[in-house]
Image 1 (cartoon, rainbow, N blue to C red):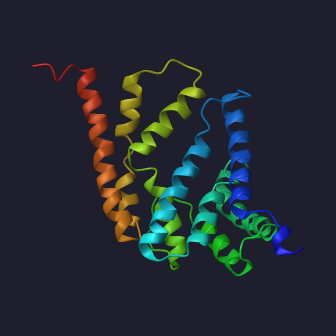
Image 2: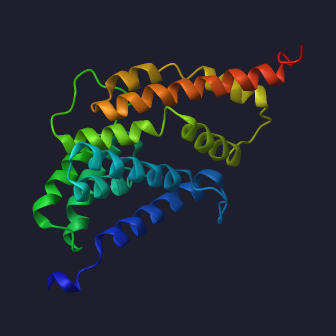
Length: 215
C-alpha cells in the first residue's frame, strides 16, 4: 500500500486511544455515556507534556507524541502488562499508518518501559525518558487532583466526603520518589513546583474545612 493511502498517524492514534478509554470508562462507571473519561484526559495531558519536553530536550517529537498517545492503550485490558502489550500493539498499529517506519521500534521501546511510579535506575534513550517524565508529571500536580476526583466520584458506590478526598490527597506519599526519578532537568524543576502546589492545595482545603482560617 502506498504511503499516501495510509491513515494519518496522529488522527489514528487519537481515535484508537479514545476508543480504548471510552471502553474503560463505560466498564468502570456502568454508564453507557460517561460524563468524564479519565484515561483520555490523562493521555491528552501526557501528549502535551511530552510534546513540550521533546522540544525542550531535542527528543524526536514524532516518536514521543506517538508513544504518548498509545502508552496506555492496553491499560484496561491488562493493567499489570499494559506496557508490554501496548508496545506490541504500537508496533503493529503504526505500520498501518503513515508513521515513519524507521521510528516505529523507538515508539514501541518507549512504551515498553514507561510503567511504574518511580525508578531506581534511569532509562537509557531520550525518547523513553521524555515519555516517562511526561506521564508522571501529570500525577504529581494539580492536574492529578482534577483527574482523580471526577473519575472516582463517577464510580463510587458509597458515601464519600470532602474529608475523605483530603485524606486521600495526604496519603500520596510516593510522589517524592517520582520527582526524584525524573530524567530531564525540565521535568525535575516542574515536578518539584507541581508537588509543592499539590500539597499546598490539600492543606488549604483542610484548613477551610476546619475553619482554621477564621481568626
